[in-house]
Length: 268
Image 1 (cartoon, rainbow, N blue to C red):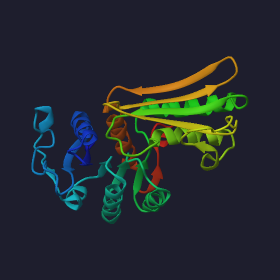
Image 2 (spheres, rainbow, N blue to C red; image 1 turned 90 degrees about the horizontal axis):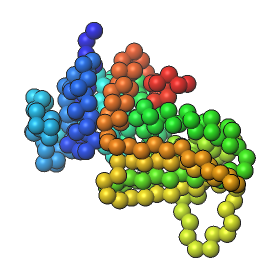
Image 3 (cartoon, rainbow, N blue to C red; image 1 turned 135 degrees about the horizontal axis):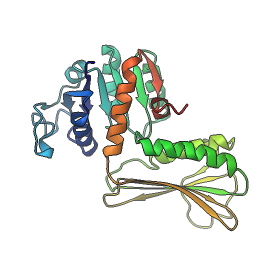
């Protein structure tokens, strides 16, 4: 069986480097292209130089050429860059795995439209463990559906530019859905001053930014006399990269469609 040809967007960044490493370690994948912004100081350097073992693939500033050479592009960059890469992938008929967060409703609609032409996996978190937590939250919300206050607490490194994280929002969406609520109406994203008593139908979000925290997420169900916490803590970025490769392989047998990691893992 031929190996899956992979192009990595944002290859000079922290997540991009991890994606390069994961692709090189995957026996069923081949790193054929790595690209970044044309003004990146890393253009022309070996994509695996950071690991001390060059791979022979140089980081390019030509997104179109990079995407054209691949079967699937994996993108964890910024919304504006991801959407530009997605349009190229759509034009060229290439699959795409999107782990970028901070997408607006309009951005998500554009991704859904692209899925009508090419296969796309778009998920707020690619880690297998996080997606297991998503399923646990469904069960917990069904059981703890009365008398429990719900709070989502997340922490990330100082460089993260969006808040709350996409994973935290997805957790809130899952819990709200199982409780028959609309997160847009019941979410509370900050508290300050005299806020009054907590309204029982709300779902609160707390955000921490600092240091080099990769990503910690907790959903707290606080009842009378007990607290249930469902937590996932990331010790590194490799789980996200490995999940992304799993998604890229999943798309090999799809001609078009919009999927998420629940589809990839067979959890639907």
